[in-house]
Image (cartoon, rainbow, N blue to C red; front, side, top):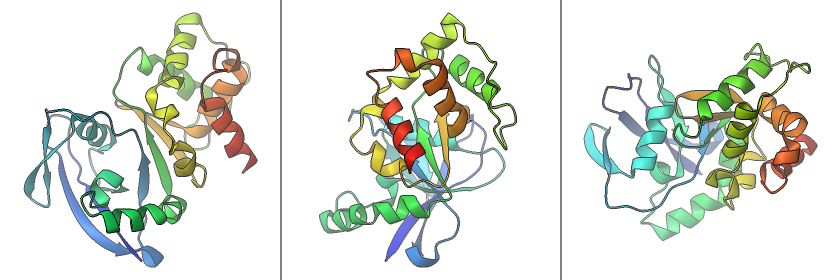
Length: 219
């Protein structure tokens, strides 16, 4: 059993996106991160990136995701279904879908991409990172309070289309570690879960987020 990995090369936000594709055996694959995201709607427009040295046009939503996940100084090895599965090959696609449990379980991290910066998402992420304190080993501050603008921003984040995807549970339930991304902000799972369940539960009753957090805590 094998899989493709996408190496996202380092760069600044003003520089073109460069990637390399490689094949690895699933049983001995080096460290990688699997990405959980929403594809977005098909559209006529596209954005340019460079794949194995050649121009490649992709959906604007995929381009924005790579821009948000790109590091300034080191490569990132990623498994992203849109790139790592030949979507035109039905046989390969069906086979790789059958391996997705192993792929997400084997990843060192699952990266949740919530989309571009919008609706005060930076405010929400900054607050939840403050809840965490030390981001390397998050310790929740139980005395923290939340104001109305921040609560509204977190609520909007938890009702984004990503959370209503059918595949969300399958992609993150087996994760060893989860990191959320939105625009150029990132956040570990623990302060996100704490904020949603302890400070925002009353406002998220119709969002799938609370059910996902409960399932992850049980598993």
